[in-house]
Amino acid sequence: MPARRTRSAARCRRRYSPRPYVSEVSPRRKILPSPSAIENLRTPRRFGERYNNQTIRAGGCFLAARYGSDVIVDLLKGFGIEYAALNPGATYRGLHDSIVNYGGNCPEIVTCTHEEVAVAIAHGYTKVTGKPMAAIVHDVVGLLHSSMAIYYAYIDRVPVLVLGATGPLDRSKRRPYIDWIHSALVQGNAVRDFVKWDDQPASVADFGPSFARGYRIATTEPAGPVYLCYDAGLQEDELEQPVSVKAEVEAARPTSAQADPTALADAADRIAKAERPVIVAEYTGRHPDAFREVTALAELLGAPVIDLQARLNMPTRHPLNFTGSEAVLNVADLVLALDMGDLFRALNRLDRTTHEKQSRVRT
Image (cartoon, rainbow, N blue to C red; front, side, top):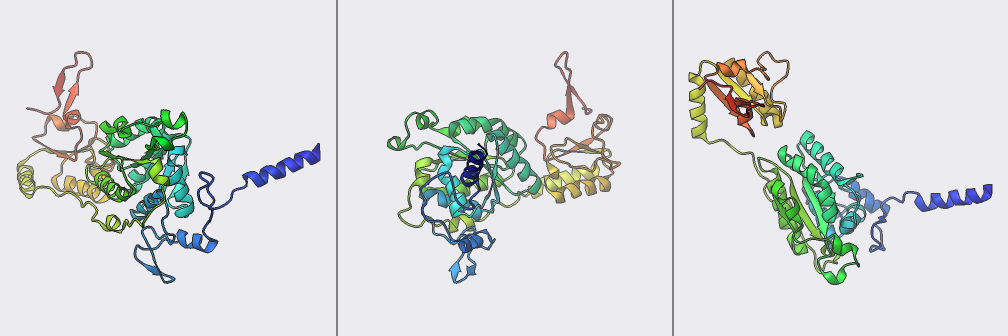
């Protein structure tokens, strides 16, 4: 008996011991990159840089893309996506395989137990770092699981890149039962009301323009999540010719929005004439520079600040932080509203018994 247990334990160790850079997701690849190639893949390099007489493609990858899902990895790396949170699923097995074998585990996979957790992690990472993170969700079921977290990212104005998959849309390639009950047309309808944009590219050649547009829309203010859905069949199709993503990677990113100079001049004139101005801020502090400028403006004007706390807009211990005080609004002759999503909440209260609105500011 002891010997049998020993053999069983050894067999388990052989079976389940981790094998670096080998994907268990799909058997389609028979040749793995050498350790030196893997090390090159894991070394961050600039797009277009020369290294060992080879030109670095998007994301610092030396291997030539062979499958549709490899192109998605090129896009993720080219746009600087460092992490992808996911709960593994069969519809994006091609993408999972490409991240491991083609991308050299880059973006780095954050394995989660539920799609809502995956999107929530991407939400928090993006909110803290200011850099979009990807969350990958499986088919209809994964998208529905993640829908609440996508909604929260939308409400919080956080540009999470939600990638999904469906199909195969070619019915002749579907497995019996499971691929039929988990596919939908059009899958993005499930979350369309609370993402900024969704798309399902119909060809591998369209992966690049679709991803670039999604990234641009997600990161344009006011920011928010987008959903990109990829056909499982297209992910696993071998490329007939190289698909370059250079134009998409080098395309201009959205710049910060600028206020209308005429409106700024009018606001400055009103503020200068006000005797008791009050500042109300909600999302302003999402940029560190704006956070400091709110404090500087309040000190210059001697104006109380009410922070609605969608972001941290004012140091909580600053003497001009009057968050929660209605008295300053009652006597204000001007309210400067900065980056507001809900000004009504700041300026009014609702009687919970009669449901009548009562203004906090004098009229």
